[in-house]
Image (cartoon, rainbow, N blue to C red; front, top):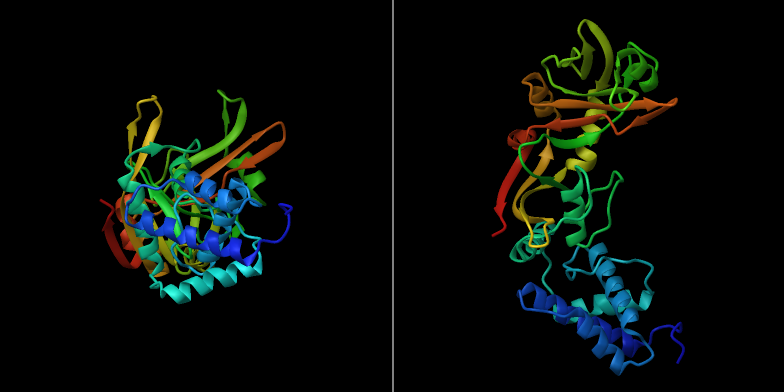
Length: 331
């Protein structure tokens, strides 16, 4: 049989059964060996390679992920699967009467298994490395869209005492300039070390060293530089940013430790589960100095780089933003 022929019902059933046996073992914290499973399946169904079974397992993960059901650790969902596979998976679920779980419980179970593995190598670099590591170990695709990360839940990592980024949004309108390019030229400074025009700063309702500060007013937040109104955000823009990505958010606390190989390891210890952010609370937090805006602009050789207008809050103030919060220990 050629390897590019459609999978037979027998091959599909074998893959589905083996997948759920693997998932069941993982959920019981039992040791598993995916490679050995693929080899065994391939030795029985010789028309399919071990790699083919691995990819089929990822297809099964995709079916389960789309249905918001538990899926196996270490098997990133991969779409573009045949219809017969989805039918087989759903039929298996019906026959075995697998209990449905709230999405947050699926996430917590996965995080508890990750915590059980202790400190894991950090993936990625820069300020987003712990978030990338979390997505890697949860086996979910990296997400830069407006959609939430995990089955409708937005994921954020917390480490140290740095400010927590909520979202990035362009201003509703510029007031003292035409656009971000002109703002950089007018209000920026020359970075001698990197030989470029730059505007990097973080400020709340108190003036920073450059004179920028936030002013929460009725139905908008204004960015001022001393007595000059630079730009503003309508409350509708802020509400959309909060609700589109933060209607349901899990803030995962990360601790770090040096591994034996000298590299940094991370462990996921605690989860703050938050639901229903309040624009009213956000505006009051801004008035109280618990909301920050970061500018991240630079220009060199006529090209302006923008890493986003980042809205951030202190980590100990995150819960104040939401109508419902729950602290979950992952030990």
